[in-house]
Amino acid sequence: MANVPSDLKYSKTHEWVRVEGDVATVGITDHAQAELGDIVYLDLPEVGRMLSADDQFGEVESVKAVSELFSPVSGEVIETNMDITQTTEVVNEDPYGKGWLIKVRLSNTGELANLLDAADYEKFADEGGH
Amino acid sequence: MDTALKQTPLYNAHVAAKARIVDFAGWAMPVLYTGILEESRAVRSAIGIFDISHMGRVRVSGSGATALLQSLTSNDVTALQSSQAQYSLLTNPQGGIIDDIIVYREAEEAYLVVINASNTDKDLDWIRAHTPAGVAIDNRTAATAMIAVQGPNAPQTVAELAQNPALLALNRFQYATGTFSGASATFCRTGYTGEDGFEVIVPAEAAEAVWNALLAAGAVPCGLGARDALRIEAGYPLYGHEIDDTTSPVEAGLMWVVKLDKGEFTGRDAIRAVKERGPKRRLVGLTLQERIVPRQGYTIFDKNTEIGVVTSGVFSPTRNHSIAMGYVATPYAATGTQVEIGIRDKRALATVVPKKSLLGG
Image 1 (spheres, rainbow over the protein chains, first blue to last red):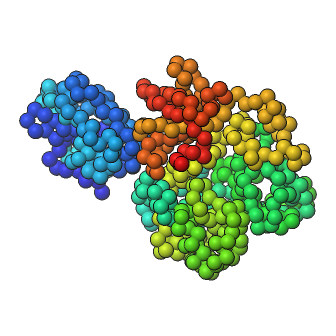
Image 2 (cartoon, one colour; image 1 turned 180 degrees about the vertical axis):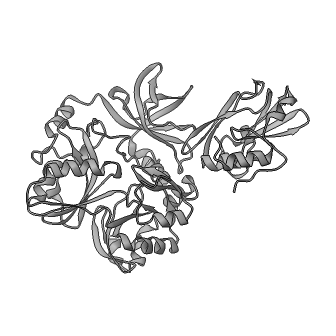
């Protein structure tokens, strides 16, 4: 069973969001990494890029498949986890911790209400949501 | 899972092991158990086992069997001693590749031909259409199972489990019959991974016992994902990727199994013509410095000129960067040529290498 921490928000495209002040940390869920299998490549955006909610911000590629990454929130990319681009297995091993992908300075905190909470995301993922 | 999919004798074992099952050529097959990288690395470092029972196994026997296979296949079956096997091609009149196969010679006029699962029906139709009276074609696929045991520890493990040290004396592409877990078994020193090992054929009802004995001896179960990664690292072609009915063995670098001087066989003149005028494109290995994965169908460029196409690509579990095979126009096929691969909206630099060098060294 996939791990779905209760303190995070989730998108229907299988990203998670952790909000601290006006900064959101974004990654992919345990469900997503398990579906992808061994992750081998990450394409992350430039720091400074402005994202709107649902914008594609990068790609995650496993041995089997490539998947687009979508931002659950709007704002400026202020940090990317470049440390793991050569050790991408970290995303499989610790998707909610060391495997985070980007940090975004939120421009619209009201959008967070559009995201799923843990219980709703777990239900969505269990139903095979795509 | 679609219940119409065919199942191998090991299907229940795969499900019980929580393998991820996919539709491969109409078969419900494990693509992975724990992870493609982990499984691939187990084969390179120790021992892995693969259910390859979906591959077609066809017995061709009776007076005229040798002549039939000599005319339908590109390699020279008359060069085979009994208990030897050879890699070969079924070729069409246009000089294209119907399938790549392994031919086991059991006796003067008796063979076992192992063919790709995706081509089993096509191959059987083709062979039967050319079979004279007196030669029997017996599809043994359902009655038997086939397990590939691969990796540096594979020969010793198989020899110990089968209590048959003579297996260690077999050369590559030699085979022997014996017993395994009490059942009759054929052990062939072959594989599709670039590692030492055996491909073992046993009766379908013995498959689970043999599989479980190998697991108990420490073999890691591996799915089709690892099998594909390992065969790409080894530079081996796969039908539907590097070869098909329209590709010439000249382009694919398979002339080592085409014996143009053995006498008449299907497609010989067409293949000879391509060889004499030189192929327009050649299959090459490609190594990348990065981890992004080139996949089948991606375009290969020299600057802005399209010069070829990727046929297979994978993140190499052994080398930790991506590798590929693909066809490039002949002027670009020289080792060391720098090319670019279009991957979605990006370009990845790649270097042309011999297919046999993809694993490194």
